[in-house]
Image 1 (tube, rainbow, N blue to C red):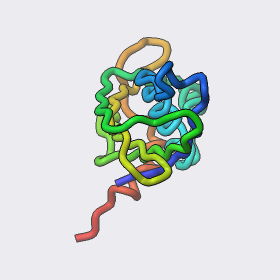
Image 2 (image 1 turned 45 degrees about the vertical axis):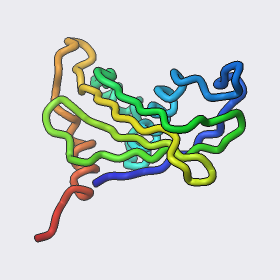
Image 3 (image 1 turned 90 degrees about the vertical axis):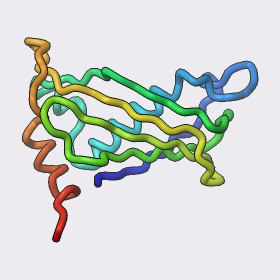
Image 4 (image 1 turned 180 degrees about the vertical axis):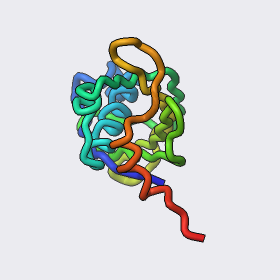
Length: 139
């Protein structure tokens, strides 16, 4: 399993009149965490775009358990439960506050798409090679 953690400080502009993080901002928090998790492998979204690969979100699920508020320091845990196969990659996320209380959990599915043809394509080999060691299981 591949797992990372990313910290994000809640900005005032991300809260609503109740001083609570507006639910739509969790999509951005998940995106920041995904981009940083890939960066930890030594690859960026920009690198993949240069390879001619884009990664649109095709599905997103969230469960909101507790509220985050302005100036909270959030930890977004991101993991891949399995090595992506084919054109799909599935990221799982959990957002925790500074007291390590689970606030939100979610799952985001993206496709690997050839930028020019807009057709589904395989995960770039360089990304597969970076992820593979996290999924090697010894018997």
